[in-house]
Image 1: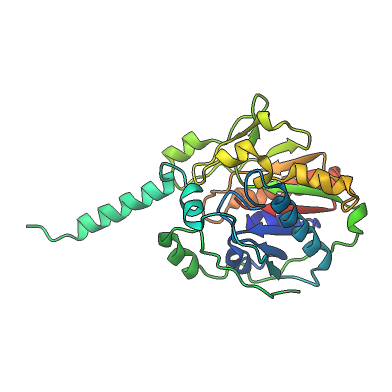
Image 2: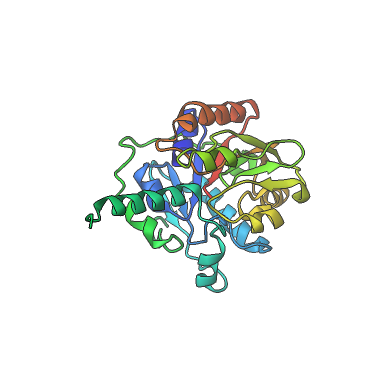
Length: 118
Length: 170
């Protein structure tokens, strides 16, 4: 997403990136970043919690207004409601993604190749 | 107000990925900036999510079958999402996150209803007539996003007179 943010900003459209991984925005030198410590897939807050979602969107808009220049980052001081360990498990798909399965297979093959022949 | 709190970027990330991101180099070496000059209560705001959202019955989902065959590839195409879309028409294709919650409440990822409320309250001038959706897993470098999808979104923003875009990686 930082790639898209830079492309859009380069065309003259100001952007704010709301992200659970602001460190990645830092590495791409994004213009304006709002960090949130929320589970993946939930950038604006919890399901059926319109007040939380609105607070996050409003914070992003305020950053749009207030940011003094490039690489402005603000991290939201708000904890995820409920059990963080459950949230950690719940955002992940039931089946590992193709790239994860692919990576696991590459590791397995590398280990097999490195194993001494008996 | 800037930098008062620093959160943990890895709080919800599986440990195996943490090392990869920590070891990642600085990807860009030049800052980037477009001024936001309009008063917010006169500005038109658009939204962009990478949660793989599409409109069922009108648009195809993202191509996850090709991704299953080519695990390093991710569908780089764009789905415009009109601002008055019904929750029941929302679909999502994404192999890296669960989408149950956004299929019940799109505002967790693309807050079109919350934006509408801020417009009604006079905090924001207007919402975009259409917002934007992509699927967040991309090939290294995200070249199609850089050369095609990003410029396409920017062009649509110019046509719709969108003054700023709020992006939400999923």
